[in-house]
Image (tube, rainbow, N blue to C red):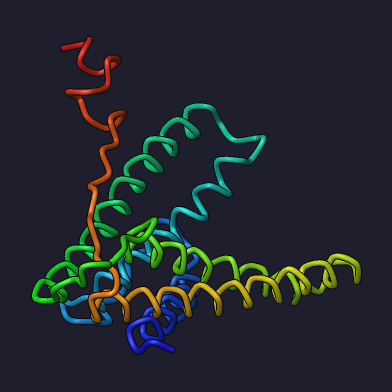
Length: 202
């Protein structure tokens, strides 16, 4: 497996486990890596994913107070923006890393940037953690445990396949067989200049 992808999987696994030691959307993560390093960015990315995962669980409570639900929806929106910003930081890292690579004349572009593929790897780490939890529930029926065990096997296979594909993409970019192009996420609904509900109130 590509060394960088292996590091991603390790950081995402460790961060997911660390989050669940606190198991609170208000918890502040420990600093495991030096500020400004790619390892630190990857950890913060997965921490946000973990917190948002649980926010999405909470907001689906049918008994949730509507006022609390609205406040949580606002928080999820803010979290989504922070997540997007961190993905773009990861792409900035790759763009700097490969800035001196001259693409071959027949080099092709990928359907997504490396960072957005790594974003999916982070989410997979969370899916694997929570699906494994379901297979270990003592209060669940044997049928539930078996069904979740089958799903866990698929998720682990998906993680392996995605890791391989990302590794190949990074190897291809570093060798000039592919080139990366970054399109910034233009989330218009978060922008007071492009969301008519917001700029209409100015």
